[in-house]
Length: 317
Image (tube, one colour):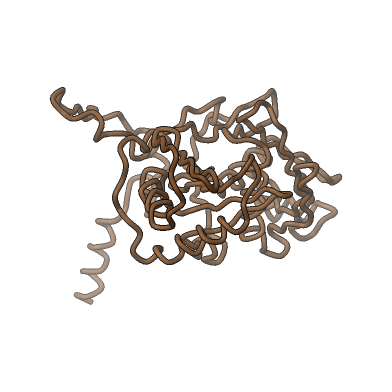
């Protein structure tokens, strides 16, 4: 009996007036701003930049009923998202490049070292643009689509040089275990490019990606092949590099949230996925728009569309 009394007393300490378990949605809704951190004016401005920039939100994210709901974290695909290689190749048509899992400021010294140790004969070097001109080819590094990634190219006359890319891939692979931590301050500016953002067009949502359509398609194709592999939940069915689109099978948010009563009085007595087409459209030399279009006869709400685009864009961050 004394043990029961102690346990009951401890349990009452965990209880809250609004229930046994604390609803953290209230914490999010009632959160207040704290005093911003102010750095001294005497600091070296070149040494500081945003470590975790927060993008500007376009549109209203509060549900129509006015109630706040804390967003759920995006689940990993059975651990596959952790299985990233330090260097990976991307291809679309005859174009090829490498994606290195470091920011451009860290990759730049390695690219300089590659050109120097391979005796490529450097003609010109511009760290602010991330370009090294040699007698054999043009080496370049730029901000990748995903945060913390860099894209490395080796071109001659605007065309990818396969032998050079192969040598670069081997070079970065050999350095993956002990990649240089040196960062060029001049090259850091390449990592400050605008990230992708959400926009609301009427009742529809779209994602604006600050890259050309071919680079966006190649990266999205690679990520969908790795993540959309869960049968009856999310699957990649078709990909078309010429049309720059993908056909996927996806269980929408409204389908996953159907309650038992809705299931009983519905013609579909089990949860089902539906086909959706992810479409990329070029809206400029360095901007691509991603949309999700219903490719089935099942309902596809604006909330379903936004939730799907949030998951897909999460693969590109």
